[in-house]
Image (cartoon, rainbow, N blue to C red; front, side):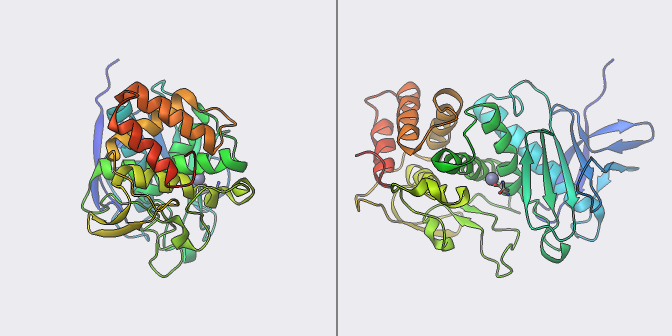
Length: 333
Ligand code: ASN
Ligand code: ZN
């Protein structure tokens, strides 16, 4: 039986006023995205297990933009999942996390003042805490895209979450998060090469991570070195995030969407950019076609060069500049 695909109106804390996929159920609506594999969004109401309550609303108008309204975080999480679904579909032709058109689900209001968000393969779901003092839920667009992309990595290369492959797993989520943000191109949250710039996770307004020069966070590495596999995966991701920035925008000072970046290279050689679209396509093809669970930095370089050759030709400027971006993070020659 045909069911109309419904579209509700929501106001998030980070995304502003948006439309979200909903489903009519009797005389009300649920936060079930009928156009995207029936992805559902639940309110955990401070719980830490199960699915809590599926968001339901009598007039299909959701959230107020204020964290005090229980639906607001749900709107941002639902919008993030929707935008990430659309990004993979529109740009990479991938329908859903597994590519099978099936939606996952999101859970918000996890625990009490929980300052994290996570993807869990066992529930095939993503979960968001409300942040410090329950005031800054970790439901921004880039965080949602980061978590959902962990699902895509689990469904493709399956990069083991430790050592160099763990850093590449983390970087994949940061890279795709930036790509989703640029793809959405909303005034409320313009595309940038920062991670978590909206959630005020440190209380000083600074982002969680920087892709142009990852060491700006005080912990991430800008370039590969032997032994990088023994640091936390959220810091060993640094060189690959830096590769993505260098490949997308090139080395040196630059302003994109009003944000200033400066990306030095490990070899002090300039990198000519291939552009963000090419960098995204190359990374996604490398991830979904050539990387495996044990891919390390050297193998990631080879995987992206194979992808660049497939997409743009082995004699293309894109191929050469892809390699130059790796040299910029001290991988290969
Ligand atoms: N938010 C973190 C992440 O997605 C959770 C974790 O450390 N696994 O990487
Ligand atoms: Zn992650």
